[in-house]
Length: 256
Image 1 (cartoon, rainbow, N blue to C red):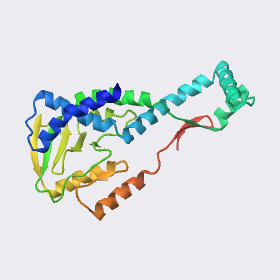
Image 2 (cartoon, rainbow, N blue to C red):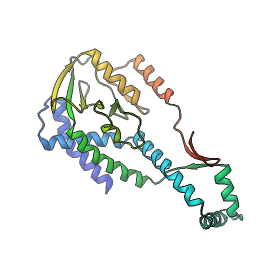
Image 3 (cartoon, rainbow, N blue to C red):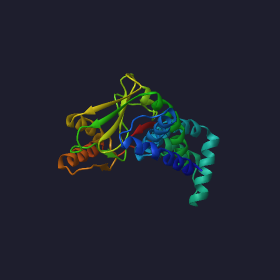
């Protein structure tokens, strides 16, 4: 059912996408809300977003897990379950020592729940994006086209937040870019005309592309070959390091 809903949104968005790629920016309210949903979906369906959702969930779950495990009856239940599954007797005291002195990794492994959160936040973002100020950036030439990636919505001037999606409303200065084609990129912000079109130079295109490169997850899609772009992308990926795990370590909730 969920995949069907997402597929329908993609299908109804395609005519609007084709219209914009032909540089016809005269959108009626229905087309605007449809494309706002398409952009929101592009933000929430990527691996970066799912990792953030799972991280936030693990951070919020860890204290509750500790509180639950502080009740002797609950420790006894865990000990019984582990004894049955392992075939070896495990005592509540051993479980308590593991939680207090060892390293317990907290994971959010229910992908169905993650997908539900993706849709919930996507619908909230659709309204926010619809109400933002849209600027269609049009490159002067095709020589230096806009890049895109597996994380195509590049959010700027948004402070780090624990709730994915909240950053879109975190500041009046927050804005994002979303490449539509090699020559067209959508810029959304919180001030200015409801909708406008701006011709941009190669210098401005490269500035937009720097943001796309920095925010790409692992894949960058470029309409041209460039060793410099590849180097920037590789450096951005390396600088992030490996994703951190949420752990209960010696009684403290940490990320490492």
